[in-house]
Length: 388
Ligand code: ADP
Image 1: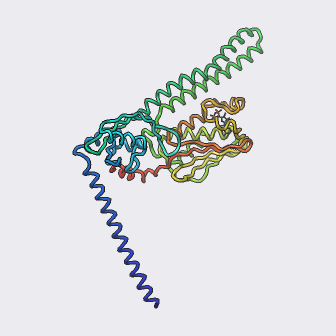
Image 2: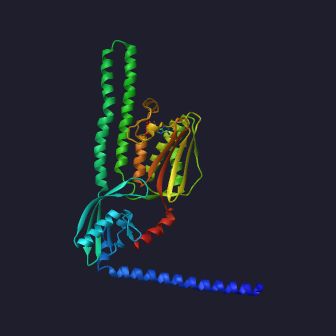
């Protein structure tokens, strides 16, 4: 075949493929439009209008438990994923109500995000609507459950953590009294009294801070948080501690990544990790802070080449008031609450925090959070979701 013929054949083939492709796309569009029309027809008159006025999470599902309509509150609570319910436990209550032809109610604890162990405490009510539809109403009780935990923990922390230093203050006051005639002993006991008082003040401050953080739900009205700004703010806040120890905090490349949540809380979490990395580094050491994304999960890491953490301690460092080496921790002014605050904040953002460490080599703490769209790209997405 001559070259000119070959070119002609290739052109004809290209044109034919173009036509086939266009027809396929048109057909797919028509099918999608027909499907939407069918879904809309399913809804009894007035149901959509009534649901639009609800501030509460509500969803209408068809005979195959596909979502026909979801209120904004249901979307933002993460109950719906595309045309399906995000949690199989909720779908089971819906199926149960449809099968029994009568309303069903259940108290459920649902997974909150793609990573981490944070949970939602909800009461779900499912009621048949006509022949095959089901109306699902969800009451989010997470706030009430969280506040009850805050109250319980506050009482437990205060009684457990304050008992020892208060006891010490009492004993030192008695010792001071009986050493009244010996000026050097008076000075010694007074010095220890001042140290215990300072310690009491910092524990009390941390317990109050922790209770405040526990009481806030960062995903109630989440905002897109730019990681570049988050890293800059947390590093800036750690500057005094780093300068005091002559440790250099080195920041990784800018990333343009975003996560959803409360910027102030996330800054506190990252700041706690950086301050720890500085405290447990030798003078003149380096601390690295960086962010990257992998499979839709943002990873913010803080690395040091400091003392490292022994294997036995590694599993426990996120526990409240746990201190790996109490003597060292006392000299750094630590209370053992820093990492439990980090864990709490990150889990409430639907993420988790991990640690790698070797004694004598250093540690890397990594906060993992679901990636969010940049603010400009997020807005059209929200409108798209409201159409479900
Ligand atoms: P603290 O106030 O004692 O620093 P944290 O909750 O922040 O309390 O940390 C708990 C324990 O974890 C610390 O006492 C310390 O033993 C260990 N730790 C935390 N971060 C580091 C780090 N970067 N390097 C070495 N040990 C660390």
